[in-house]
Structures are given as C-alpha cells and as structure tokens.
Image (cartoon, rainbow, N blue to C red; front, side, top):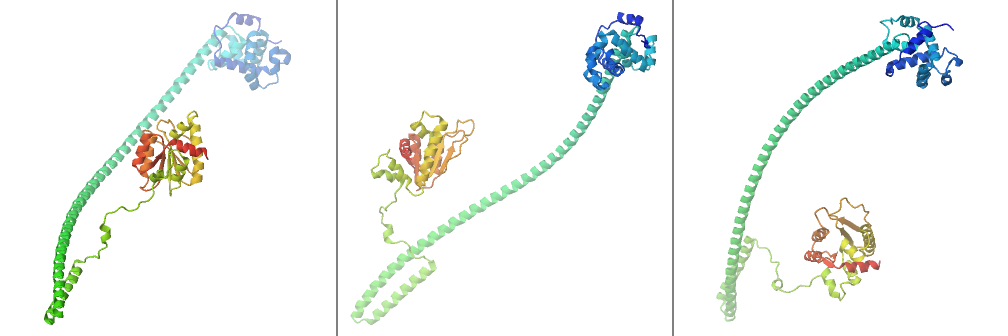
Length: 453
C-alpha cells in the first residue's frame, strides 16, 4: 500500500510511539480528532475498519461523530493499523499540512487545534509538544474569550447600573414631587379641618344660645300658665259669687224684687263673657284627662315567658318547652356545647354538633320558632366548616369572646316583650339572660324534647 505523505511508515511509527501524552487530550483537540476520523471513515472499506466500528460504516459523518466518537477515539489510540489508514486519508485530503508536520515546521497561520489533531493522528516527531502547545493555545483562547465575555458583561452591568441610577433619580424626583403634592394637600385638609372646627364651635354656641332662649320661653310660658291658673281661680270665685247673687236674685224675684234680678243677670253675663275671652286669649286646649285617670290601681297585664312556669309543669317537663315555643314570635337560643356535653359527652365535638343541629332543625320545622345555636369558637385555630341546617342559625364566638358572653348579647339584643328562651345549665348564663328578660331553661329539658323528635 502507498505510504501517506506526512510519515506513517515504520520509522515514523517508531518515533511516534516513543512519545506519549501525560495528560488527556484537550477537549477542542479531541473533537477535531473525532471529526477527522469521521470524515476519513467513509474512504475505508468495511474490511479495513476495526470490528467495533463496522456497524457505523453507513452513518453520515455527523452521525458517526455523534454516536461513535468515543469508539473511534479508542480505536485510533489502540489500533496502529487503523491509525495509519486514517493518516493516509489525511495525507490525501490535506497534503500541505501533512508535509509540514513531516518536515517538523507546521504552518504558522494554521489553527493550532487543526495542527494538534493532525499531529495526533500522523504521530510525527515531536507530536506531543504540538498537542500540548495546541492545548495551551486553546486554554489561552478560552481565557481570552472568557476575558472578553467578562468585559462585555462588565460593560453591560455598568450600563444597567447607570440606567438604574437614572431610574432611581427619576423615581426620587417623582416621589419628591408626589410628597410635595401630598404636603400641600395635607395643608389644605388642615385648613379645612380648622374651618370645620370653627363651624362646629359656632354651631355649639348657637345651640347653647337656642337652649337658653328655649329655657326662657319655657319659664315665661310657665309664668303665663301660673297667671292663667290664678285668673281662673279668681274667675271661679267671681262665678261663685255670681251664682250666689243669682240665687239671691231668684229669691228676690220670688219676693218681687225685679231690679235686683236684672242686676244679677247682668253680672252673670259679664263673668261668663270674661271667662270665654280669657280661654280664647290663652288658647287653652280642651282637657283630655278624666277624674278616673288620676286614681291609682293595678291594670291587667299580658302573659310573658316567665308566667308559663305557673301552669303546674315541672322544670324538666318537655311540655313546658312546647308551651314556651308556642308563644308568638318565640326565639330559642341554645348553649350548644353545654347541651351536647350534658347529653352525649363521649362523642367527638364534630358529631356532637351535627347531632344537636339535626334535632334543632326538626324542632324548628315542627314549632316554627326562631332558633339560634351558639358554640364556643374562641379557642379554634381556624373557622369550622359547617353547612347550617334549615331553620337554625349557627354562631361561633369570636376570639376573646366566650359563648356565654355571646348568648347574653343575643338576649339583650331582643326587644322587650318578645318571648326569648335560653337553654343552658350554666347558672351564670341563666342569671344573665334572666336580667335581660329572657326565660332560662335547663339543657336536660331540650334533650328530652329532642328525644321525642
């Protein structure tokens, strides 16, 4: 077989094998070696290929470089015959580079990576130094690229910093202008507030003046009423005198004294006309009071929730609760946990709530009364997820507020006279709602009534 230009003969091979690398190939040189082998691969027959590379014979050069790179590099290092054949192909495709390497003077303008890759395949004298020099050149180029990238990154960061500074200055100016506007608006609001306070003070002064004038008018009216009452008493006295004179005149008339009768009649007419004129002048309204209104007595009252207990029923008789709920517009407030822990304390709290609310829903449908069930939620970490049953209002006390306090607030919120029934065994709760006009009953009463649902 024809020997390749660049020296793959026995002498060169002996020289080449005498040298060896003491470190792995630089990555750039390795990729170039794989590319050279992949390009030269197609010029060999299947029989000229090592056994482990024959499966890649039909691959394109790019696919061989991708899938058989490691295998080609290993065969090139371990199989001198395969390496010599690849060297022959390089000598045919790049004769100038092969001759320059054989002569020991690689072209100065050639890429160090190409020179190192060709030297690694052809193995001329001093090829190790060429590979090492190429690795150093690659590292230097990489360092230069890294420096260039660092410089560009630094320039970019400087531009961003300058832009950020400009943006910061713009934001500062904008915030300063907004602060000035806010200060002006605050000054305007302060002025308006002072003006409003002045108006309020003037209004208070006018109100005090109007109150004083009203007090004066009331005092004058009281004085006029007192004077009118005195005048009325005087007129009544004169009327009495006139009546006496009339009576005397009647007697005189019976006795034939007609002149005296005329005088008395004239006096009576004068008194009556004077009384009517005084009534018109004082604009006295007709009296709405009657003598019977001034007599003190006890009027009949209406039945309240407290009076239900007077019907000879036990405090634990469920019929008592039915009578209370039968009152018009009755409202039943239930201390939830007090009832459930009295009736079924062994159950979990969730099942206690569901059982009680189910019974209250049926009771609400039967009686038509308003029902509110209160649970203590002050110590709960999160709100309880619960769908309230139909006809029952479910409430949990807020943080810092107990269920007892919430029940007392509900009782106080009701108008006086409305039937309100509170179910709780807690004596403090019962006493508190009783002061608000509600009717407390024991928890066992409700439990007995619900057992009939």
